[in-house]
Image (cartoon, rainbow, N blue to C red):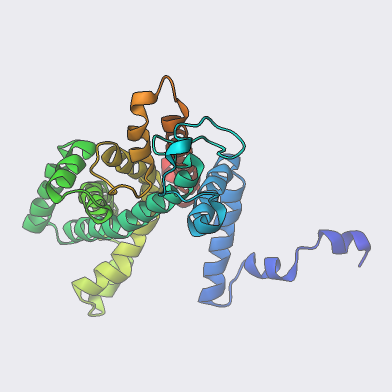
Length: 307
């Protein structure tokens, strides 16, 4: 074999992943995952979103080592300092470093995103799949409940729940999750209606599988691609709602750094000390954009029908 042929021959692991006839279930799954990643990586905007979210995760994990100042301790002698060498993004009304507070605020944002995703999505898929599979009165009751939640604007409903529950990150997560599950239920129901009459579901039913087993083992996995796309696209909305709750004082309790609360603190000095609220607002915009770009990329990979 010539040197040229050796150079263009794919590595052994890649040939194994791209095999036309997989020899095991693991190989088939890894091959499908690799092909999905290749498709995703070819989208430059999706990769940009992945980089943005990767930076968010990095900042959240290593905040104590990256932040140059204490995000909570104030220094009235340095209050409202413009961006400079000692404070890259300036200081707020209490002399706290804005860059350090944005870094630690990324922890709050990431925690809210994660908690909402693992609470709202499972509730939505359970309600939607159950309604679509059982039908009848069960479907009517569950979907009318879903329609009742969808009748109210998400932000207004989250504000109502947050006001009733009180400030705090746990209550903010609960308020956002209570308003985020209905779209997932609608998607799960639609997907269930398309697959509940398929041959593999009928075969599972004839083999003696219970309704619960069919729902968990056959119906819900078929709903996952569409739900993953929707969840990734909704994360930008979750960030904005969390920032809105923080802006109104219904989110994370001070002095814990949170981007929406930081914008609220600087709104009275927006013309003179613009940096106090501008940089947290930029952080909200950039991270929201990153999740939207990832969602668009995942939609092209997991749900081409929506592309």
